Image 1 (cartoon, rainbow, N blue to C red):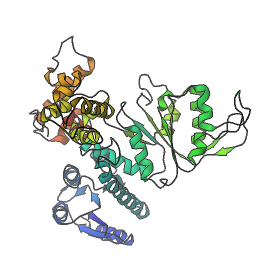
Image 2 (cartoon, one colour):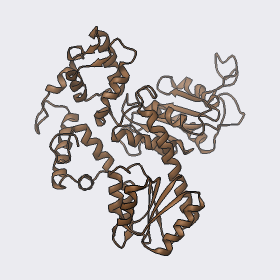
Image 3 (cartoon, rainbow, N blue to C red):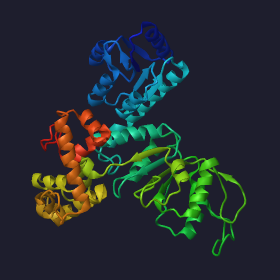
Image 4 (cartoon, rainbow, N blue to C red):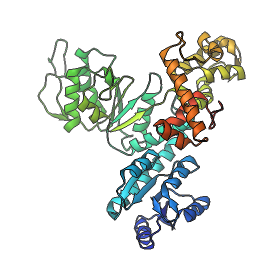
Amino acid sequence: MTAVLIVEDEPGVREGLVGAVQTLGYRALPAGGLVEARGLLSTEAVDCVLLDIRLRDGDGLDLLQELRDGRHRDVPIIVATAYGDSERTIRAMRDGAFDYLTKPFDFQALLATVERAVKQRKLAQSLAPALREPDSRGGLVGTSAAMLGIWKLIGRAAASEAPVLITGETGTGKELVARAVHEYSSRNAQPFVAVNLAALPATLLESELFGHEKGAFTGAAARRQGRLEAAGAGTLFLDEIGDLDAALQTKLLRMLADGSYERVGGNEALTSRARIVSATNKPVRPGETGCVLREDLYYRLAVIEIEVPPLRARRSDIPLLVAHALKGTPARAVSEAAMAHLSSYRWPGNVRELIHVIQRAAVLAGGDIIDVTNLPEPVREERERPAPEPGDDNVSLRDAVAALEKRMIIRALARANGNRSEAARQLGIGRPQLYAKLEEYGIGDKGDGTAG
């Protein structure tokens, strides 16, 4: 049975919350403070936590951080307080709270939030094992903290009907994320239709998206259904949305506003029921240098935004990805020395480049084992490349920035005595971003150069 831990030191409020949670058919586990809550968490499996952050025996935010750093990191935590404190609200959400409520409770809203939290967690749980299997989602595999975060976002997106924007570098697996959002959504029995907006000229793209009527232009010998119509009540995936020209951005914006559109050359009003999921590796956020996407269109497309991490930010996933890439090749394993080179390389082409390198090396190896000599020269040389020093004119901007980031993180961890939450606060970043950087640069909690 679904279990909800209720941490509240006011007996009357706690009793009311227990009764409310039980009306959902859930099991309520009441705790009068932090000590009692920690005791229950050590013996009980919980699916959601209702946490008052101002308690007589301590600060609820301390328990929030403990849960996020420990084995309960995937349990949604709904924090509550009688005080409208913006700083504590921001801290709670920054540290991973699912939602934040104020007292006195609107019990209808509270119960809706609990139900949503439980539903999204179950979706994320059903999604995560599948994505860990190398055969299940192509390159979308791994057990790193960065990938755990992606699975959670996919689960939340799948539980929603809102448009999704997926961002990330080339080769990170954005279409795989889009397909996972579709597959685990209520639309999974409907079509998933993908359009690469960068692959078609603007003159053909409007017809490709919206369809056209007979005689709409030279060569239009018959009415043609567009991709939007073909998607029906399924998902339309717009890849490379950053390449969409201004005129089509306007038409897409109108369709997103109320679902209405017309075929090229027609005047019949059609209505789309498709969910829009888009992706890009280009700057699309308002104010970003090089952004060509309309600001109003961005906000329509990015109701939910998923940023897929580069491979260098989840190096611990490389062995799993290598195992996936080896399937169907003549080779069956990679030598320890070759794996060390693969784990050190920065992978500018991300997962796509890794899979290509492994499949190529498997052919060149001519046997069961891929060794260092079978790897391309850039991968072989990466481990011998010294870290750039300040003032070195022979390094790229990317490498210089990476070296500076690494030094700053090491210093912050040292000042915080290895406390990651405090180091993230000092650096002005969220803990998930810090975790990704620790993995990317191979930094331990004490800044000792070993993965933490």
